[in-house]
Image 1 (cartoon, one colour):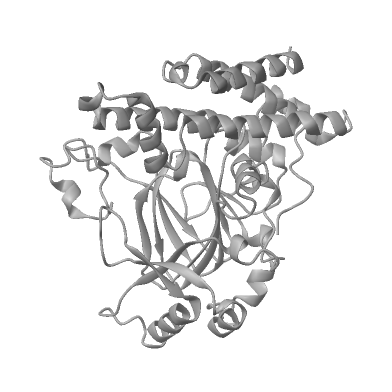
Image 2: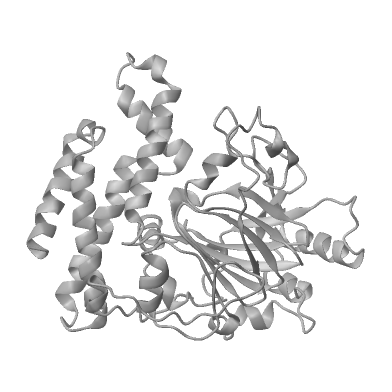
Length: 408
């Protein structure tokens, strides 16, 4: 299911120069639309490093098995084929018309039952009074590891997050998902997990994306600091509740068509609507370009946890309890983040020993290791890291010394 060759990065990317953009304007989006093939290095310099969104044309998904087998001739989901292939599996389904704790509540359903509901909704022309259910965050690769629905495009293959999770959980968990939903289903305003990158490919149907660059989400918070649930809501006009909202706070709009792939940069808040019956594939991922942002996110989340229990600072091992709460609220804490970095560093060091020193991937691994060395310096200076177990601090110090020798 995953590509095997890996991204090709020339050494000149370490001292980048501007490249001509191979993109065209589009009336349906306010970001670059890439309709012709570009190199990984161009994507790296123009979008990954600057943390800029873009939209790829359907040429990068045209050979995917799922686009052949999951879509009927009229461009609609092939409900019967999906039932035959996967109908007995259990999937997570959200109710888009309900709100619980600022989220759409989920339950588990048998996929065949969800597909029956969806097909009935389609034949009834999406009667407004019926439920609006959305299959979200289905770990398809974990459920069907041998099916081979797609290959990760080369632009997104430098994926530390899934590389680590594959090793840590041996296929029991990942950040690769399938979404299936009827016209009108949607996802509220959010930024992706850990402030990771994400990419999202439409297998069929169209989506509307509303993007807010980092920092602009602060204008969408109420007096308690909570983000607005739905950016379409008129409650944003209530200046007493949303004092920082301005009428000129407008999102970047992107209309994503069948086969097209959206690149979502780190920390960009977004809200997504299915304009038609839609199936999509999504990965969250982290690499050398945004791992510092992941660390900054983790630091900010720890501050929120500490503020939440600031009246308990006299309790035994208060800092340890904060790390437990950080893991529960964010999905990762400082110790696991260190494990993550150590895992990636050790794999890169091993690969450099066995690969041809002139190979194209060699340059990318060198860049990964330089980034890791820089980030370890930042972590070692963090006051909360200095309160962690001595063994963890020693592990980081030892790795930093090794990386300094590799990157003199």
